[in-house]
Length: 129
Image 1 (tube, rainbow, N blue to C red):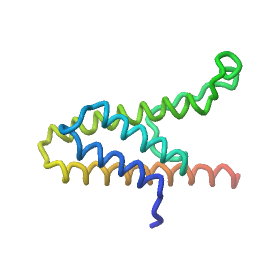
Image 2 (image 1 turned 90 degrees about the vertical axis):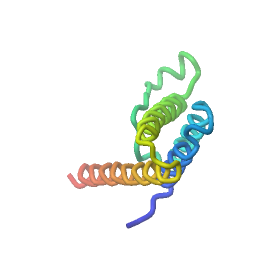
Image 3 (image 1 turned 60 degrees about the horizontal axis):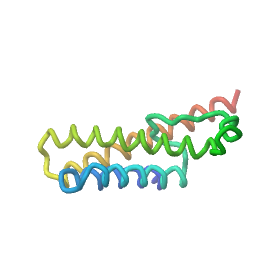
């Protein structure tokens, strides 16, 4: 199995946020999660993405904002929101913070790799037609 650096970055951010849950403010955890998603997107944009708005290029003409910036910001915000909800659910199970962090990080890594594989299979299938 090939190790995906972008998946490791996302998983590390989710695990760190889960480990800090209850000890730090939600805003701090959200920034950690958003930062890990942005860093992972720089390594490889393919992976878990709950929601990312990709506006047309006309937006750049209207408000001088690059469509990629809007997509990155909305993607990072949705990633942080989803992980904060997952962390809240995991904290409800009353697991110790290190175990909760390991479970969340492992689940995020596995899901990110699965999404990446599915994307690459779809791309390979469409190019072989």
